[in-house]
Length: 128
Image (cartoon, rainbow, N blue to C red; front, side, top):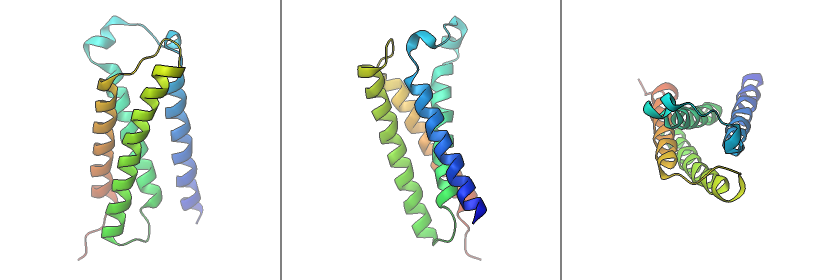
């Protein structure tokens, strides 16, 4: 039971971190030209959402059937993608010096999908 609550806490804290990072005003973000060359911003989005899906999947991975776990993981992945789109809308309308970027949505979606596949591989136990 303790690990169950611990994973919930970790997942919630990660959501708060992701939300905070998305809500930082653009003027607070570093402006370094080499970052653009390696698409660092997109890799950060990818990692944030991969870990978001992974942590929530870990929390929901216990004591369910294989089909049930896969359905839950897919739901988490879809909700993560919707959250990423929502955060882009929030950035566009409410966060100073931030904008809506389709490329960020793609990175969020790819990270979410990667989190899904990693979670399936890691947490879904195949019957013997």
